[in-house]
Length: 429
Image 1 (cartoon, rainbow, N blue to C red):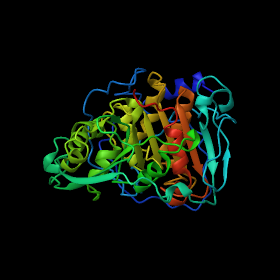
Image 2 (image 1 turned 120 degrees about the vertical axis):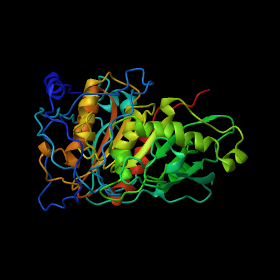
Image 3 (image 1 turned 90 degrees about the vertical axis):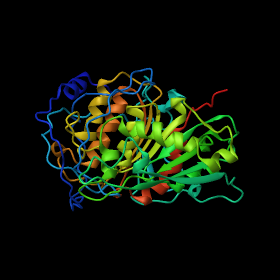
């Protein structure tokens, strides 16, 4: 692992002049130039809400919310102007320790120093699959996203939460106030035993069916390299994404504990009290173990589920084309989710934290300079570099030729990424 003290000092010493209260919404730049290498380090304020090494206590405070800078439902909107970056260069990525993705297509391991002192994954089984993996530019869908004959069906239920039922996202952040409802869908795997505490994943932007399919196909597989735990999947639909008053961007792009509080104090209790679910499983439980709690998100859903971990008690994050850019700019976090990199570097190591990151070579604003704080490729690479330097388990997929939330790349790497994400999980005895 390369962990440069000068890099850390530059990251943590960066000061942001002036606080921006909102950001402008504009379409993603398509760009015609080639891929711009991520050579600069992330900048931002190392502030607020980070978990300590114990991994359990959420950050304090509700976070200040801005109302501008909405991203579209596919994450296409970028950020407005922001103070220029002054931080240093990214740490060097190692050359060993990666593993090619399962499921066909091209893949080469081009990075990944072992996070715990080794030089490659071969010396530490716990680091297998860590590091950077390049895939593409041609892709083959994973067969694990096609439901296999005889796969256990499990149980599903759904219900609705309205803005009037919430104390956290009431619609009152906007003028005039928004009135909306959202659907919540829950999948319980066939293997679940009533009365036990199930591991689970929260899916932002509604219910991503591929998560359920992977669990159905792989939860019974005894091969540890082709196995995920029998996970409950909770799909939470976002609030309306109407510009410029995007409830979705408010929920997902704001850097605070607010979304974590919504999930844990409103959504999960509603799941546990759902009548059809209670009829099927009278003693249904979800685990309180951070190692059994995960989140899945694409685009702005990436920082949404990162917030579940950073400000809360989720240890497993799957982020696809994550919008770690300056969309929702607040007094506490003038550069929005761009600041996660510096926050990671400033916080104590959280050893059980595992993060899967993917970005497309031609992801949103890939030709923009780092100083604009709105380049998805640079921001995700900065996240990878910071997590690697810190010593966390992180897998970074760089999808050649791919765009934003590109289904071709996702359908190749997602099942194997989930296997890696849940590596080492042990259900409580």
